[in-house]
Amino acid sequence: MPDTSVIYWIRNDLRLADNPALTAAVKAGTVIPVYIWSPAEEGAWTPGGASRAWLDASLRALSEAYAAAGSRLLMRAGRTAEILLALCAETGAEAVYASRRYEPDALRQEASVRDALKEAGIALRMYNGSLLNAPDAIATQAGEPYKVFTPYYRACLAGKDPGEPYPAPERIKAPKSWPASDGLEALRLAPDHPWGDAMLSHWGVGEAAALSALDDFATGPVESYPDLRDRPGETGTSRLSPHLHFGEVSPRQVFHAVASGGGTGLGAAREACIRQLYWREFAHHLLYYFPHTPEEPLKDMFAPFPWVRDAGALRRWQRGQTGYPFVDAGMRELWVTGWMHNRVRMVVASFLVKDLRIHWRAGADWFWDTLADANLANNTLGWQWVAGCGADAAPYFRVFNPITQGMKFDPEGAYVRRWVPELAKVPDKYLHAPWTTPPIELAACGVTLGKDYPQPMVDHDEARKTALAIYDEIKSARR
Ligand code: FAD
Image 1 (tube, rainbow, N blue to C red):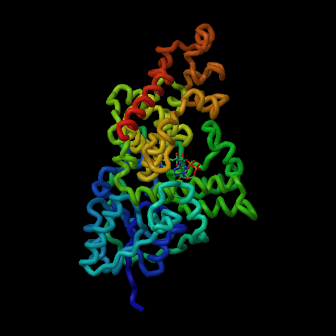
Image 2 (image 1 turned 90 degrees about the vertical axis):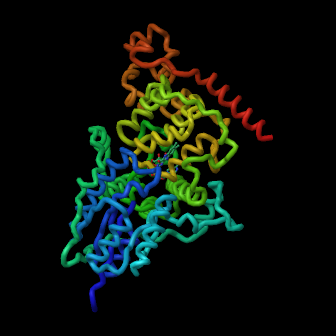
Image 3 (image 1 turned 120 degrees about the vertical axis):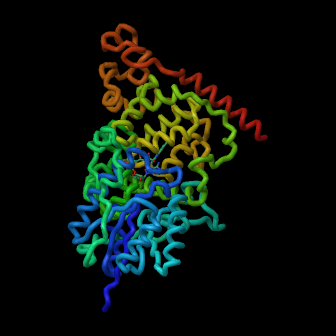
């Protein structure tokens, strides 16, 4: 039988196991795997600094995994369609296999690649490996997209079981001679700034590290997930989000490890975690049907909101210098580790949007650049949820109180003390509002407000009232 060669175009599926596109390519014959860096094709959402640093490290790990399977990972930079066509011409490949991505620009990219390949008589075979359900596989009875999470979730659970993950191919058949690779360095992904390496030192990157993190979580912390998931000072969540974003682990592997570890019956703790996995699915469902939402509110009532433009205030928020310790701890954790706990993401986002009344897009942009898990669907959903302008969002009048949130979810102050060490000696009862500390006690802790740590940049109660008054005005203007 003549040998068939195919190209495997790697996208956000940086793994060998449970990868339907790769499995199909391996079945087809000789495989030429290629990663193509084409930032211009990502539209306005070119990966930010933290994502690029992660991607660089993840591709390095993936190269080693391909080598161990008897293959090689080619790297190219440039226009995707041109590179794929050139590779097909050089290798005689008959088809291109790839995993589907569902962001608007990625879908446009897929369409243009498909057209170009079709003209040359080459098939493009696409597979879903990044979601449990393709975004258009779930619809209301009327055939509409869901805008509320709970019925969406129920519809997903009523559908077919995600099934067993596929094993990694043991060997990947290599071509007799390899096309040239530009090499990872030529892609220039890693930021020049030493910040990227410091951020990565908090993580293990790549498929092996992702599977080990999943195993650690699914055999231990998952059991206390409902109790600890809102405690940023504890290891209460999986921290799998960057691994999931880059496809170092599949959602099916996560589902399977979490669901099957608990013996018979799912159990409330494991179900709570799986529910979050479906928030990720819901976010992709929404982005697919409402592709304008990374830029525009889903509820157009919010379009005329009189956002404040204040570069200085935005900078203080970004740097963790707001004077609210819980907010500042989150923003500093983000800067140092490229990740922030979900509870704190909600609080810092609310502070930006409601206390400072700065546009949620400015916050989403900062997250985009600094989060290692920056993901267009989840980031858009998260910001619009907090701002009150998205699907199934928190109502606008729900304003997170950065003091009481800190007291409730970081009662012993472990989180704040870690990230805001200048307040380490402030007693628990004052820690989340240090300006309430009696001056003598504050001096004994070695803190002078305004010098060692900022005074609060706004009065939360006042800021809340102003935000709600503006909201009422907008609402009345609609009547
Ligand atoms: P776990 O609690 O262990 O959950 C397991 C997985 O489920 C996560 O890895 C994630 O993929 C998914 N998940 C959990 N919570 C959510 C959620 N609320 N929405 C969607 N998916 C969820 N998540 C991102 O992956 N990328 C982003 O860019 C992003 N931006 C956000 C911005 C804001 C303002 C907010 C409020 C949330 C954002 N989130 C984002 C969602 C959430 O904060 C992270 O997914 C979560 O903190 C990741 O930590 P974990 O892996 O330990 O989650």
